[in-house]
Length: 178
Image (cartoon, rainbow, N blue to C red; front, side, top):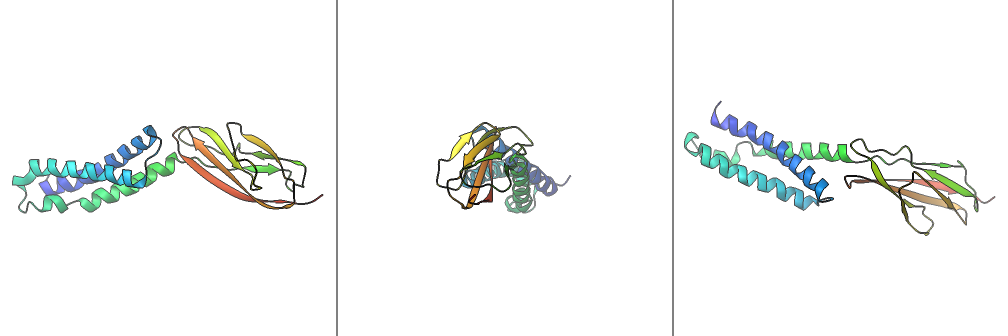
């Protein structure tokens, strides 16, 4: 295989490896920000550049091509793979409530049993019932709540899985007077 082709395709593979490294660091360190993920990708790229320069400098007709050949493949592979990994690791938040038409001063049961994590398990459910009351984090699938006044309330559920990834869902609950 020609040196530039080898550099190109190995950079695409390194993009995959850098995305895997970013994902593993996110799991081990309970999340990294975007700047940290980009920093990891750049460090992997720079280290690979110097290895390629050391290994292929004499074999490439224009040594400047070592820096530029395959950079797009590297970063495109990194971005797509990292996005795929994060999509797979995100839990899915879903909830229902009953009764379907709640009234004031009656108990409403919220059920998050349809929430799931395809790569792990959910460790917490954080509820905000939208009426200014306490925001509650629990490990149970269900939670009850009583609304004191009628109105439309935005109920927010955040589920967190064992990898530390969270997803939120919200729904408007209309509470009527009896």
